Image (tube, rainbow, N blue to C red; front, side, top):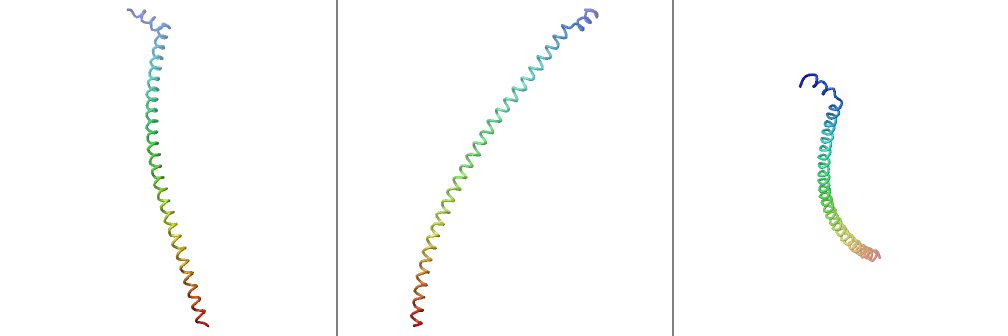
Length: 108
């Protein structure tokens, strides 16, 4: 192959068109490959986030259940305290009435 033939091949539009098509094909293949791997990474990441979210929700529900049980115990204790105070008030009222009656009798 002499220099003139090589020069004609190098300046031929067909050769440059083929080279451009090959480079374009290689570019789009690489672009598709990158896009596909990125998509797979995003799908895996989404699945991981979903699992973490489910675990967080499970922990929150357990905490909510424990909190509700604690509030129920607190409410029951407050009801007991209310009953005790009511009973104590009644006893105090009876004692005051007795004391008041005794002081009236003593004053007479």
